[in-house]
Image (cartoon, rainbow, N blue to C red; front, side):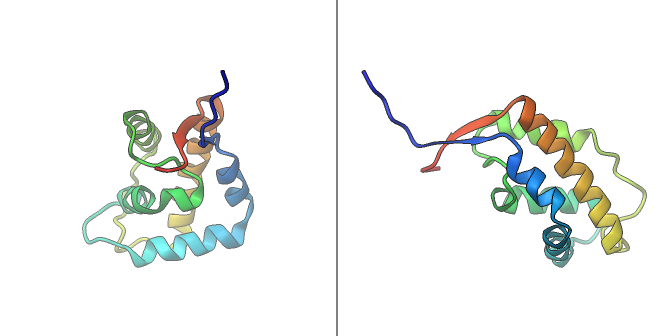
Amino acid sequence: MVVLQKIKINNGSKLRKILADEKQLSETVEKIMQEEKDGLSTKDVIRHYLEKNGASLGLPPLNDEVVILLYDTVLGAIENGNTDAKTSEKDEFLVFLKEILEKFAAQLEVNPTFHDLDN
């Protein structure tokens, strides 16, 4: 019996490519800064952006409990910092984004996620 499925494997490879591309990282930070929310920490602003746009960066979709736990694990391990998003500068966002994406890439390399291409 042969079963064919359209499955995407997220193993962090796209994230590593983005991390190596300073221009793309900078463009992503610009987009994140446009989405600033009053009173949210830098980490929370980045989380909100990644939850909405993570697929374009190579993150798995948030339609699975395992992926939600991955987000909670990675973002729970990141220190919040003392500044809020309104007073943060681009460099601070870049540092936070790099740290978060590096942790996602490491987690996905060890524990890749699988999902249907139709989702």
